[in-house]
Image 1 (cartoon, rainbow, N blue to C red):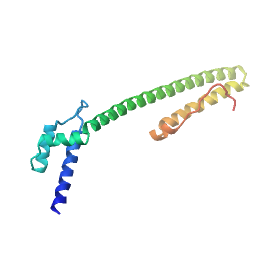
Image 2: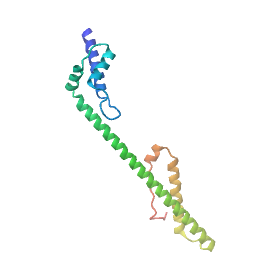
Image 3: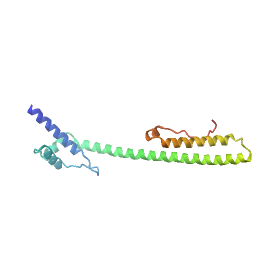
Image 4: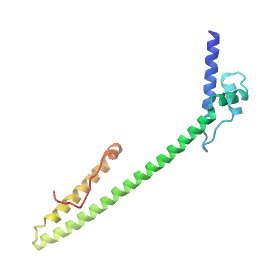
Length: 166
């Protein structure tokens, strides 16, 4: 019974040593040296553990390779997050551009339609369709802006001014 308890404690010590070994500082380097890990384990477990023991564990279980792989994954994740943000920024700019175009078309179509109505030429279906379509785009963009982020990410706006017939 005592032997298995000792074995369990040694295994826990080794896991704690590994976790300390794989801890990364702000600069992306190992936070603790083998000597510092040895000291921390001695404080945690109130027993003597030589730095060579920690070194042996690290070498035997290939902790350095694990550290390098973990560090690489962190770099890839950071790069991926940056790229995702750039894509989101571009999409936000695209939506902003569509909104500005729709507002411009809406104002222009409204002005022209009002002018033609005043002149007595009220039969302008193409202008009415542009006005209706641009108004719908503005409303849809405003609705998308009010929706929560998860819905915004899933919502796709189909905007096109080539065909204004309904």
